[in-house]
Image (tube, rainbow, N blue to C red; front, side, top):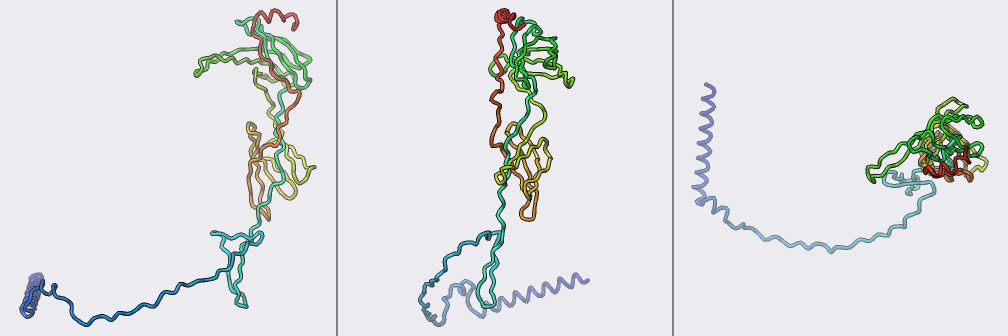
Length: 296
């Protein structure tokens, strides 16, 4: 019942609205388009002259140079305030410049193994065990000769085996020979493999640090993770890079500086003047026969 009543009220309201619009149009005697086409009437507007534009000028004082150890920038704005006398006071942020490191990496040394394979002379190309090996003793700075099975008591070693492996290069299509000799180190009882053309080094590394500030400062370390001191500064040896002759060192935070890590490269590369140079192998069987009597 209420829905029918609501619809009846809506119809009556629409009829009243339509009647009102019809009465307005009949009384005005003109259509809606005529009303829109009429020219606005009324008094004319008075012209108001704008005041002349005067360009303002200002005298800005020259910028002052920053005080020593005072830094201000976008992310380090200064503090500007009025003092008791009404003057502007500028207060920058005091930032202590980072201190330069006085220590430096003097050298990285890795001790070579006491016996090196300098070369070899092949007597029988089909039997590597008959090859004469040319060895060098780093401690005695002496050359020695030997064959597979020889026991060199004066040099605390025994030659156990010798092998030549031919490896093909897929790019050039050539063969590359890798000659290795296996010896028994009588001092340690360990089996050691020597490769021709490659120097064998001990596992132990010596890292030498010195100081530009203190000429007497000399420190030698061997392992990563060791902590050391230079003056009031504390450091940690983080990593050792043998191929690059460099180390990673961390400077621990102090009252005046934060933690900082640097890669230090050795200033000098120490080489031994009497370091032996590996000789090229004499692979001719005729050469072996000619000099066999000399080396036996």
